[in-house]
Length: 399
Image: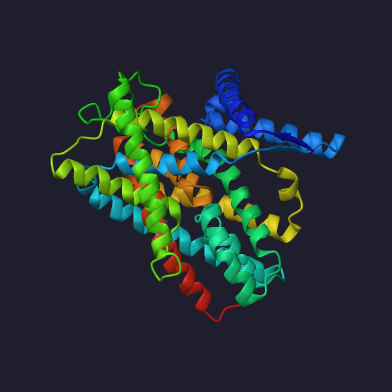
């Protein structure tokens, strides 16, 4: 066992990002399929760790204690970037996209339960490998695994939930680019002039040069810290109640309230350039740490029926993005970017969705609408909707 310290892990994550950038630029298939840089670099390292563990018997353990704070900081910056006036302007599109997302949640659970029964598994395992861990991710999977263990007698529910969520995280970062590449042949790519009449969000152009100052940077850092502290307090307050939400949702909500209350009262205008810089750094480092520290040999230990179930879920996600998300959202360039983002959080997590969209827009031009809709739906509304749908399916006599 080789243990890498927190500082060493941070250095490794930074190197993974640099390596991923070079890898994508120099490898034609990765560039053609717009694979996000953290996904490319992180998976190569994860595969090297798998080789070391299986061949040499050496296990490398990264100290990932910074991973959760980085994820929460990312969600805080999404909240601080959320202008309610902009959200109101895109409200109709957001509601339409939320309906599309609801359709996927239902489909994932129907596929999961049906296949589990067909393969001779407990139907509750199919639900666990449905929207609980795929659209829900690691946080939702961990939260619900105890229920599956205590109420339905699923042994090792937590470990299984984490394995399913990890599988989804990997596939969510891999299929978004190919889905976008396939759909781009069906639309006219507008190029860099697209949305030039609208101010882009900070996450839309992560490589843009931003002029910042020490004072404003500290102010933005303080707002993020306030969002983290307020979100954690809110999560603890709601814990154990009917309104319990994951910490990252509470952090995002706190950021939204901070930004819009301060702006509405005329006290302070959030400086989005600093916020977006901190958010993009947090996003990149979080994804690099999450992917490079994957224990792929644990995924290999999944029983064959569960591997089949998850593989079908991944194919169903790609088909849904192509035939439902893309068409319902307008069959245009914005719909392509939305479909790529949907693959990200439909199988993995919102950070994966943002990375998928950034990989597409970096090559083919901005999509202001997608970067307004996906972060809020993928990071906030989906968890509330998913909790309702999970409870409905758990109550059905279909197991």
